[in-house]
Figure 1 (tube, rainbow, N blue to C red):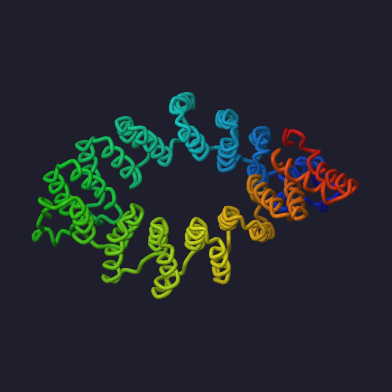
Figure 2 (tube, one colour; figure 1 turned 30 degrees about the horizontal axis):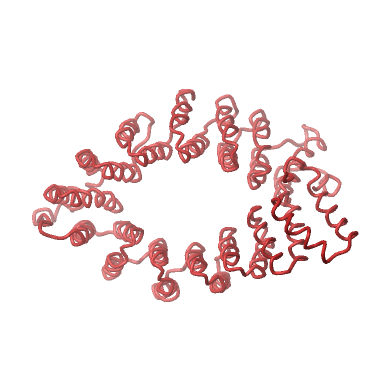
Length: 515
């Protein structure tokens, strides 16, 4: 662990300098040590921690599951400081504690907020609700909202999250009650609100309520055309057709096209689409075409429908609408191409996905993003072609403005490890470390275990040392695998020296040593 004597402290310490010192530490506990030492080395009249410094140390501690137990005490100190606490800092801490299994500590942080110096906390409340609802703890979430003070800010994302969770457990009737109360929270329902509730009502067979919901939505789009709302309409129309209510589907589609999607000058020549006598697949195709082509054409409406179709695996219908959109003069966007690439990769057509990136996007002047390359790399890894994925990493980094992220390297390392290419996985992990991206304990352990199995024990020992420098501890399995193999190839003095060095890295963190 870094000591204060090894750090070059400036004569005058500023918050920005302190933030840089924290970010330079690989070990979160070293960063916490410097954070605590700063207030001892400098008088309060010269330096005090600001909200940006607290945010930096919270990010550092949140990156390691073994260091998250320091977050509650740190946030209590932040809530008593003179500078206002940031809601984003509390929300990140709540999510980190939940991911590491400290659920009771995350809830205690939320209960601390009303008496803290944080003026508003919608992000923190959303993080706590997301954690509880992900574990289906609806009663706990209900009690939490009941006990919070009346000025608790319930935002639209939190309300949408509650509705989505209730629809997942087939309780759209309760989701309807929340939808009716959105206005009481000074919010306005957005497209996600209607989409979540429409899908929940249709899945539960409450089609009459879904029809009423759609009619209440029509007035919002009567002046501007449908744009991306076509996906909400399509959910109801296809559900009516599956239920055998074709006449109702025709009636609803006619009203949607006439009221919501048609410009006033074209209403006189309007004819209601006929769905009677068609099979299920043809009805779905006719509905999709009518919603986009029969209404006011726009890039948003095409994009919403194309992305939805690719997401459902309907590649043929999506390609047909995609080509029609291009023929009408609309320029495809990067998210549309990413949806196409993801859909093709999901169907196992990685070759077609690569042609989309290499040929189609280039011909239409559309520049791929990092996420575009990650989709292709992930598909190659799933097919057992991780070396091809590494080649795509090289291609991506040659493109100006495309910089590999931590998630990019993790996709490649995981794919190489799955194929048993441990040496190449270690090489990618080394490139990742040079970028200051630190993987988790599990990935380090897998690389060390793989290097031991192929006889590269010295390199495995170096990664163990790097792991220790970051305050991460391998499991008992790694120790059992590594120590006997090292003992066979090294003398006793060298082994003791190496283990003493690794132990010194953890001496300041005895609670994290594996039992």
